[in-house]
Image (cartoon, rainbow, N blue to C red):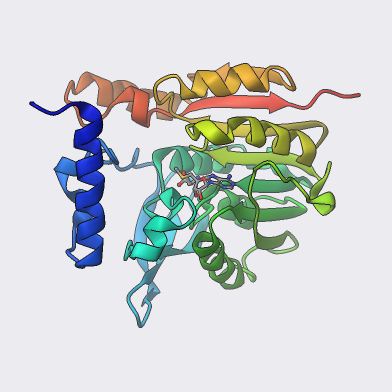
Length: 296
Ligand SMILES: C[S@@+](CC[C@H](N)C(=O)[O-])C[C@H]1O[C@@H](n2cnc3c(N)ncnc32)[C@H](O)[C@@H]1O
């Protein structure tokens, strides 16, 4: 290759932008875009997904999907998912990675919450950076006896989509209070109503934003009750997971778990043993991180 990597990535980004402007479809699955957005491995297959009878919206910009798991019969939830009709505004606006798909870390976190649903009884829970679905948060609202679940993201389009999902699941959440709101970690954390409110915070695949890591640590610290825990799942993505743990260690007691569930671990080993480049541990295997806010 005659050009260096940076120029090549920048060319791919312009190509992506040009395709959006001229409305050429399938730009997300173009293999040439892989160094901008590597997404050939889609999920671990832990959850079953089918189009719900409410189906596709009139403008075909969203679809209602029913998520369930054969490991937990009788549990399902209905989620509104955006269809990836990305506009120029979307690309130029706030981070859009949560409107592209449900990332494998979110899938695994949802499965983990299903398996450990007793842990959430009477708890006040928040999902941060949950993207357009907050899948783990919705499952927590629907299938645990949490007192409250707040679904959040920093992207307005994601949050707008979440409000539909919340309304759609009102009957299924029982006595659990469930809501959606915009929440951004950043330099101006002005949210007195959320301070020391949460027993548990969920977060999937949000550790790779270099500029956001310290703000995320500060926000988690502000929002958790003393003794409260953040359950985080993220691939190592180069050094980014490690960079986050280094910062978090200054504020939290910290546990990193690679093998946290036999089924997920066995799938990981199976994908690795296939020996192709579709499954890349560094990009796809969610490592679990548990942060505990110390008691005063
Ligand atoms: C890779 S996506 C993960 C989305 C979802 N958790 C999943 O795994 O499917 C990262 C998410 O972090 C959100 N995000 C990025 N920076 C943020 C910030 N400063 N405040 C709040 N959310 C942010 C994005 O909007 C996006 O939804």
